[in-house]
Amino acid sequence: MSAPRPQAEGEAAPAPGPPRHSGELGSTQASHRLLAYSDALLSIIATVMILPVAHTKIHPDQKLGESVQQLLLTKIAVYLMTFLIVTVAWAAHVRLFQVIELIDDVLALLNLACMMLITFLPYTFSLMASFPGVPFGIFLFSTCAVVIGLVQAVIVAYGFYHPYLLNNQIQVSENQVFYKHHILQIILRGPVLCFLAAIFSFFFIPMSYVLLGLVIFLPHITRLIIWCKNKTVGPKEDEESHRLEAFTFYLNEPLSKERVEAFSDGVYAIVATLLILDICEDNVPDSKEVKDKFHGRLIEALSEYGPNFLAYFASFVTTGLLWFVHHSLFLYITKTSRFMGLLNTFSLAFIGGLPLAYQLTSEFAEKSHNEIEAIQVSCVITFFASIFQFAIWITALFHERETLHPLARYGGKEHAFMFAKLALYPCVSLGAFFLTCLLSKFSTAIFHIMQIVVPFAFLALRILVRISLAIMKSMLSLSRRKNVVLDEEETCLSPAETLS
Image (tube, rainbow, N blue to C red; front, side, top):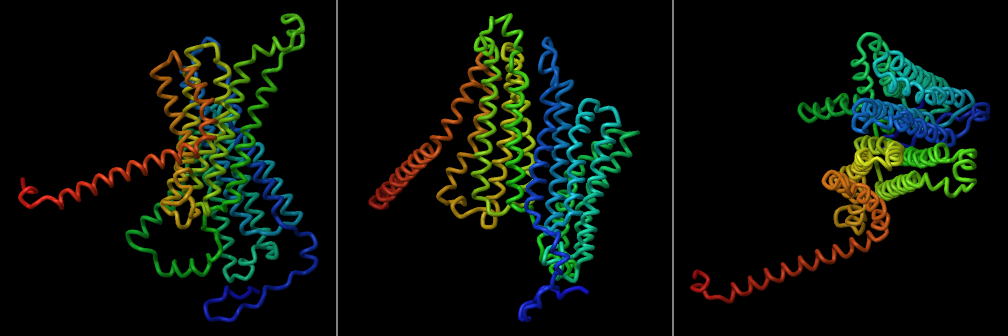
C-alpha cells in the first residue's frame, strides 16, 4: 500500500510513513561508510589507469616524438576514454545511493561484488592499450562494464523490494515504479552501449570505440537535444506536470558537491602516492652495485638519481598546488551543475596523467632533444589539468547566484584573487611551452624556473593582486580626473572659442 503523496499548498501535513519493524532495522545501517569506501576505491581505479601509459618502455635510441606518435598517443587516448567511463560508473553509483539510503548485509555484499569487478578494469585497460587492434581487450573491458551494470540493477531491484531501505521521499511517493524505472535507465544506459561495443569488437573495432565514447557523452547529448527541443517547441504540459509530481526528489539534479569533492580528493591523493611508488621502485640502488662500483658509499650512489628526485618533488608540488586550487575553487562553489561536473572530470583525467609527466622528465634528463619534448608534454598535461579548473570557474560565473558564494561573484571581495589563482597555472604552463619551442637551448632552465617560481607566486599572489588592483584603481581615477578637467575647461570656453 503506497503512502500519500507529498503535501500540496494548503493541505494538512501528511501522516508519517509506515513504522519500520524492529526486524527491518536490526540489520540495517547508514550507507555513509560504504559510500566513502566506494568513492576511494573508484578514484584509485580511475587513477591507476595511467600506469600502463606511464610505464611504457621507450628504447634509449628512439626519439620521444616518434614514440608518442607510434605508441604513447594510442595509450593516452585509450586512457582518457577508460578514465571517463570509470567516472560514468561512479556517477551511476552516486545516483543509485541517492535512492537507497540504508543498507543491509545483502546490499553491502552486492556493492563489494560491484567493486571487485571495477578493480579488474585496469587489467582490461592494459590489454586494450597494449593491443588496440585485438578484439579481446575491448571485449573483456566491455563485458566487465556490462556485469557491473547488472549488479547495480540487482541492487536497485533489491532496494525497491525492501522499501524501508529507500530514501524517505520515495517511500511516501505514489510513483515508486516511475522512480525505479528512471534509476534503472540511468544505470543500464552505459552497460547497453558496452554490450554493443563487445559485439562490434569482433568484426569492426572502430565502432566499438565510438560506442564506448557514447557511454561518456550520450547523457550530455540527450540533455542538449531536450534543451533545444524545449527552446523551439516548448515542453509538453503533461510532461511538466508529471515531472513536478514525480521529481521533487533530486535524481535529475547535479551530483552532490560533497561526493564530487571526495572523488576528486581521492584522485589527487592517489596521483601523489603513485609518484613516490615510482621513486621507491626505480631509484633504490642495488647493494652489490653500491659495494663494487661506489665502494660502499651510498650517498655517492644516490647522487646518480638526482634528476629523478628533482622530477619527483616538482611533480608532487604541481599535484599539491593543483589540489590547492581545486580546494579553493570548491570552497566558493555552493552547487555544481552537470557541465561543471563534466569539466571537473576532464581536469581529473589530466591530473591522472601527472605520473606520465614525472616519468618523462626523469628518464630523459641527459638527452637534450628528448628532454625538450618531455618538458613540452608535461606542460601540456599541466595546462589542460588547470584550464579545465578555470573553465569550471567561468561556468559558475554564468549562474553565479545559484552556484557561487557572494564573496566570489562579480564585485565580490575574493573575485579578483580567485581569478588570479585559477589563471596562474594555465598562463605559466602555456608560457613555458612556447618558450621551450622558441628557446630550445634553455628548455631545462625554463622548466626548472617555472617549477621554482610557481609555489612562491602562490604565496605572494594575494599581495600581487592587491597591488595590481591598487594600480588599476589609481589609473582609472587619474583618467576620470582628466575627463573632469577637460569637461570643466569646455564649459568655461565661450561658444565662439568652442567652435574654433
